Image (cartoon, rainbow, N blue to C red; front, side, top):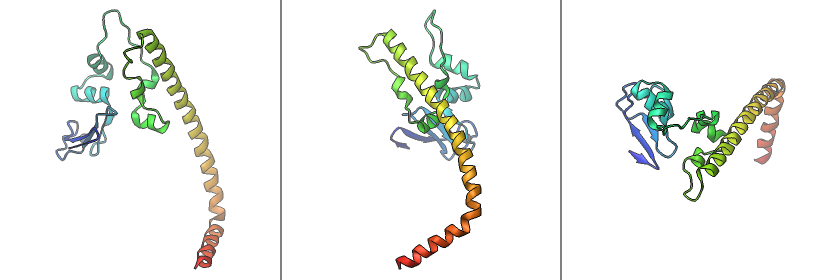
Length: 159
Ligand SMILES: [Zn+2]
């Protein structure tokens, strides 16, 4: 089955045969609705071949001689996490033909730094937000009966 780069197939990890594994070829992510296995392309390969994610990465994206791999922490975020902060890593997947590798490297590093900065800020904000919501819920418990009465009055008034 195919819909906008989405594929459904049997799950090789839990053996599900009713096509509960979803693959998204646009975002390079997968998720099984039965065993909850999920992640990106590297993780898929690692699980499938029972190797570490480092090995999977090196197999999928082999380095040229003398090249060193620089793994930016932002590259470990899943697309679902990136969605929360409004990023799409497709931004840094392919170097435009007119750009030098140096320019591309700098752009890529800057973009990843930015993504990582936003992710850390978002999490700090989320923590603060959850604490605030917790306090509001506590307060709401004391005043909830009052609030319901108010809504009831409005409904009656509209009739
Ligand atoms: Zn599964």
